[in-house]
Amino acid sequence: MIQKHTLTIGGLAQAAGVNVETVRYYQRVGMLAQPVKPLQGARRYGAGDIKQIRFIKRAQALGFTLSEVAELLALGSASSCRETQVLAEIKLESIRARINDLVKMQNTLQQLVTRCNTTDDATNCPIIDALISDE
Image 1 (cartoon, helix red, strand yellow):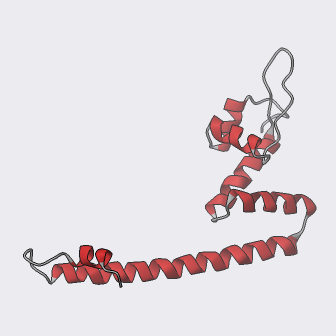
Image 2 (cartoon, rainbow, N blue to C red):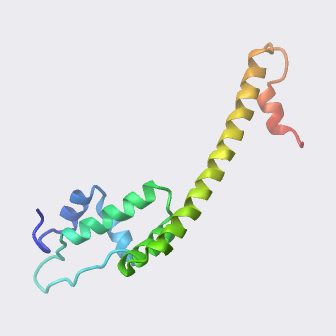
Image 3 (spheres, rainbow, N blue to C red):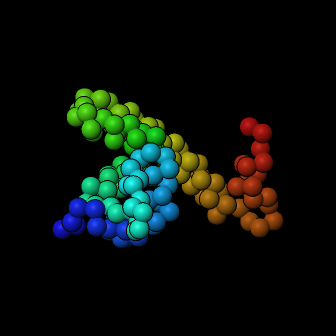
């Protein structure tokens, strides 16, 4: 168990599974508080800071942008489950749309690869032709 405010920035980064520059970036954009630096020493971080960084990274892994993560952090402190659900539903719809786009891309590429397999080296490459085409 991490004692209250005993970690340096390097220790925080290691405990949270990120690098020091990530911690500094989160501080610059206001997603993580920067503790006051004592006159003779280094800033110290605690378990709450680790938890905050892990929250950010988990939300990003679910596809949330940093801007959306900031909204989630604000909602989390206000215990606004309904608003959080709405954000999650919007993200879910966005992911579904991206999946549909990816499936279309996959099908198109599969068709082009199949056409490549049925043509000889003397003809133009169907993939290049499709990319050059104005249609």
